[in-house]
Length: 180
Image (tube, rainbow, N blue to C red; front, side, top):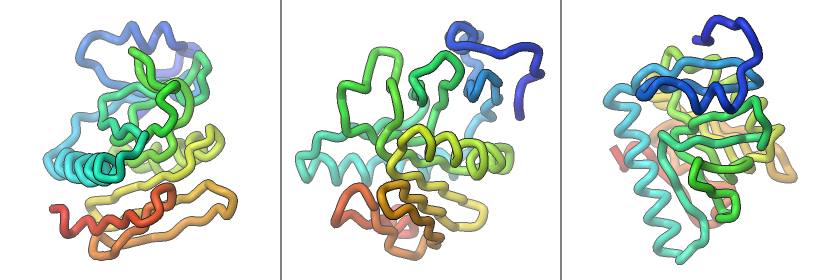
């Protein structure tokens, strides 16, 4: 749910939020972030572990970072998001404050209060910012919408029972039902 819009908010406003208040700043507008529930956190935890394990086993250079982790998506003064999981393959993008620019892969675990933001607003923002792959994990429907924004853009819908191929990592598939 957005904050009341009285002005265009900026990076300064984002970093001045009261301690403990979580919100995302998208195009100068704040969106409140509700506390995650158990299944949300469980999904973030098991997905983070599966991706981390794959990268470590392959001796990969990418970093996988769970929320809360600030991403200055367009490296501008108006957009700071906190994806549930960010995979960043260019370590120069990582700073003390978060990620400067688009991560390579973003995973959002949708909740009833975040569905419009995740499926519409962030989909557009992530695509145009240069995110290579975006997963929307929906625990209510036990479904994962996978968007690949590489040369042959496509979108596929999977269930938690499916082997979901990771587009940016050849050879990695994730079956969410086996992780839970």
